[in-house]
Amino acid sequence: MQEYSLQMRKEGKKIGFVPTMGYLHEGHLSLVRKAREASDVVVVSTFVNPTQFAPNEDFSKYPRDEQKDKMLLENEKVDAVFIPSPEEIYLRGFQTYVEVGEITRGLEGQSRPTHFKGVTTIVTILFNSVMPHVAVFGQKDAQQAVVIKRMVQDLRMNIEIIVHPIVREKDGLALSSRNIYLSEKERKDALVLSSSLRYASEMIASGEMDSGEIIGEMRKKIEAVDSSSLDYIKIVDAETFEEAPSLSQGGKYYILVACRIGKTRLIDNLLVNTGKSELFV
Ligand code: AMP
Image (cartoon, rainbow, N blue to C red; front, side, top):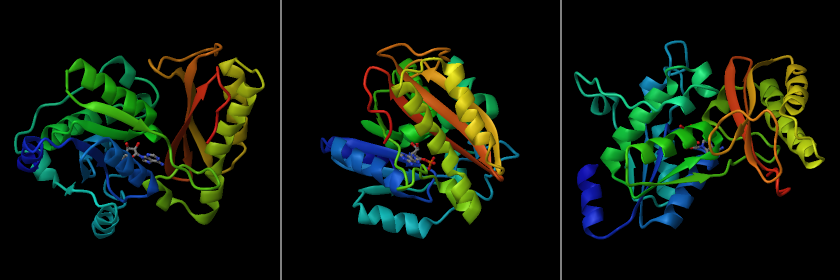
């Protein structure tokens, strides 16, 4: 991988990179198209990273379809696909990790305490392998994108990070590889994540600025769905990821929700800009 990238760099090509865990969908492909726009050569990795899953999580049953992924990426005319094995990534005797501080503690980090250490470590290894100029991440994992940006800045990694909006089904469900776990009924129930976010955006558009009120209404909607088990709803400052007890005019915030539908843990979020009313896509 490094040899390829060094050659591309020697030829003066700008390398765009999209790291994924495979089982690709339109959300991933939108990142690939964004990388294409921003660079000359596009590299996509597919690697289900064991260190970002806790022992009780779905690592072994995480969906995989290498052939289909390769076909989709070929259709997108990506220049290289990087599919390393766990042994190639985690060399014998591996013992070096990258850990970002405060912003990894709340939200996903609170529910999944070892998750971000796994993410920042694998992303560093992938960055050092692919040596991109630009990397594209999805707003779907909004906290992850902020954590990666922090890491890149703190460790002086010379890589531009682009964050691309969430791709949704027509009915609002955010695309996710994990949607495959949902039964037909759960698939319908899962719409409560996006519909409660939409409801929150309507509350804000009509002047509600109290986070507690907004979260309370969202909670009611989610808890009314029998297959749901709410993990968190949070409203945070979009830059710092610090909790915002109330919204102020002209501010930018993420409303984030994590919820189990049946056994499947789903996340979704909405970026709100209280100065404007372009609230929901
Ligand atoms: P994953 O394969 O789930 O690790 O995701 C790889 C990248 O795709 C991450 O940057 C995700 O945020 C992004 N992604 C996943 N789902 C979506 C979506 N529905 N819309 C946009 N980006 C997404």
